[in-house]
Length: 425
Image (cartoon, rainbow, N blue to C red; front, side, top):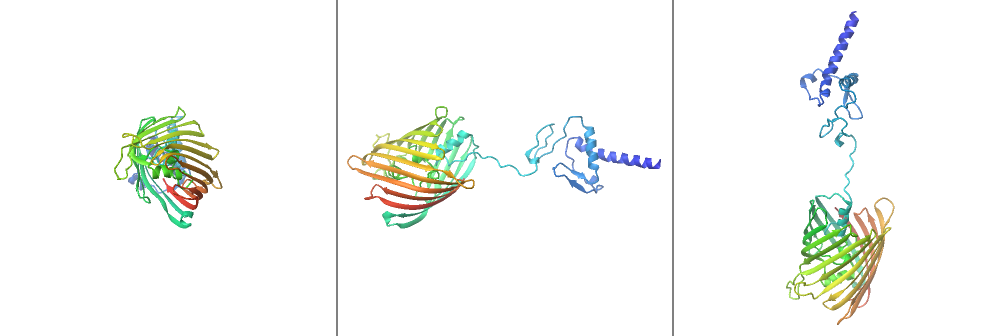
């Protein structure tokens, strides 16, 4: 009888401890530390591998779980504790912070070049619905070594571009500022872009690329050749048709109408022989995408549209992308200070992934021709071949050979060059 009484007292004491320890869990709240109660507890704890709770080593934890389970209604689920919030609804998912192990990296969506460098690439990211970062710092460096027959193959090594910039975006407003530390004109882009909720209508203001020539719209990073070619150089650099200008521009996009995109704006005019600023220039571009692999476009540039246009150019272009092969062609006509001109450009390159993920090789061929007519007749032409090695869209090495008769040359000349480039974004 005495033994039975001791066993009954021990059973009651164990039940009382289980109930007292289980009250906080039954109430649905995390137990608060109690310094007074903790003084009498001196039991080693075992931590389970599933990150649920610590249990006493002597088996009291199993008794506690049984007591709590009997105290709760059938079919209900106990509270799930997680950080930073506590989930109290039955059947609610466990918060990510409460799940042990490595967290998955967030999908940042498709990446593209900056808006100032390649507006068409940025539009493709919008079309895919990629998340937009609110503030982004970006930069790139191009280092180039060349040997030109015009200078008797004297070697030339230098930094062709050292670009750094900041881009910020809200739901309907984007802004970008960039500078090239290796250029005489340090400021490259500085503009804001306002758009409606559907991204169909956009307004640009500041300094940015005018919408003229397909090759000019291409990012220098995406361009498979080291320079933009003799036609773009002669029209933009020598005759000031297009390029980056201070101005305002409106844009309309209709994705349901073959991806139609129309841009038109007014830009700061050039300077005359005395350095006086001329009236504003006008530029416009229209492009459509009848098929996923084909883009067609036309663009124009007019100087001094307010005082009467004296120089102008109109171009038509096409771009084909199929199975890693890209082919672009563009033809332009117009009038320059020396008289009427015509030009033709074609460029083809094939991107072939090799080895590990992120590596690719890219053979490139291209040709251009330029004809000056009227009082002064002259012509220029070039043939370009090269081979590029790409790594994860962050590094590339380019080897290129160009044989060209540029404006001012008496005979064609050969130029060999190697360029290394890297960027962050």
